[in-house]
Image 1 (cartoon, rainbow, N blue to C red):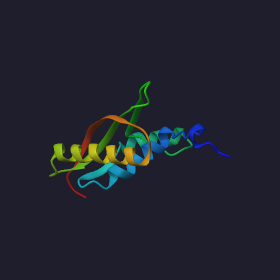
Image 2 (cartoon, rainbow, N blue to C red):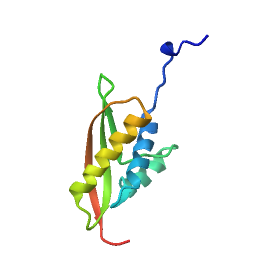
Image 3 (cartoon, one colour):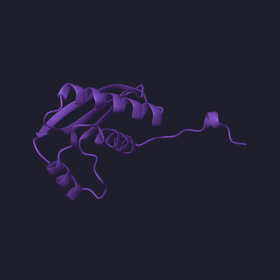
Image 4 (cartoon, one colour):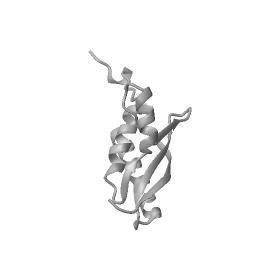
Length: 115
């Protein structure tokens, strides 16, 4: 008989980064997550896909501090986009994992003026 109280599930940071990327990419005003030149350079030296643009720090209690780098479409309030990102990341992590989100830092690395 399996005792579920003695079972553990570990979630890698790569999985958490993917959850975050999917949550952020559909937010109104987001052009991209991360920095494409940095992603390309990292892909050359790594054999696995990169989630460049999403930083995770996990403290001794297991709480996450998330950093999300984005490019935003011109015309959308950066404060509103940042609030939307924070809420989407928090909701995605807390509903899909058992991890606690301590902070979500948003870094606007660029603004796109046209498609």
